[in-house]
Length: 222
Image 1: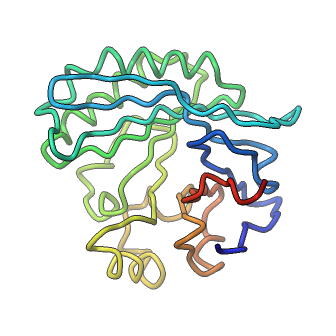
Image 2: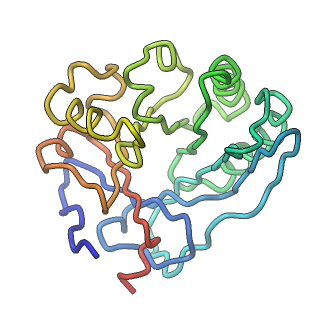
């Protein structure tokens, strides 16, 4: 198990994603991103289940609620539109639970769903309180396709530089050696990394805020 954890840095915020009910890693005491609700899209069905319940949430630790929308790989919906009311309701609920002023949408939309995805993000932005900031995760390859991210109605885009599938090697090389080839929203503001697939420190330090995924759900720190 990798022993590396993000070092304390007052100029760079490091936030742990909590998908399971685990203790909070020390580097993420200031803020955590917690899955508030799982939404699973299977054909024409929209299934909902509750998210994580982090333990030992310290006084002063702020929470970024995450709405995780998963698309079934074998029976994907033809459109995201039937799920829109459920997702909007989940995002409004997440906003009420937020103590950080942020909420996050995690939805790995397919190319055929791009228009639906962009419209959904716009609808979320409209339905949220004006003062609430909207963060969205992005698949790494979206950073090479401007049509996904140009003008997206989000306050923060978090490209996920892990679990990049068949394009893992070339994408890692671009992120490491040719960041100018990435969409501007994927270069310096925020990014998501994995504890198991980490990058050189100079890559990580480009980003003002980093989110961290751990395959064990941080259970090995207990």
